[in-house]
Image 1 (cartoon, one colour):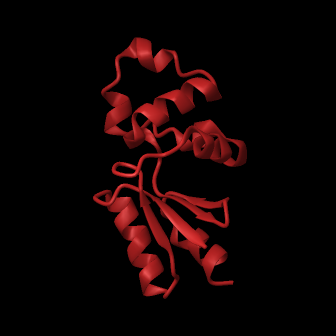
Image 2: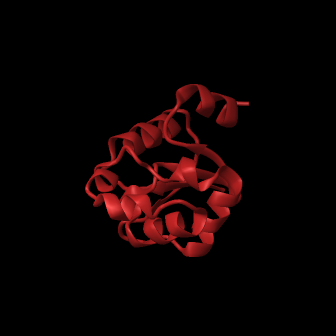
Length: 117
């Protein structure tokens, strides 16, 4: 089962959902703004892709943090603690297929190689 994790009003998430729908790919959506995200899930994602990939340092949420807080995010544990507390800072969407992360963000080329094999 494909699960798309993100925030419903995010433009990148909307592009991803539109692409999946247009290609008749069935998925379930997990809104981590309303449904949250577990530390266990974040650890799994970090193990698969690395915390540096998941932590969105280009986000308004990251830019809104004071420098001292930003400077404390130097390892996986600190990043997971921050992402669990502030889900808006997770790069999105994160797409899983049976627990395996198959895509982060929107890239039609990657989606084609993963979903249209």
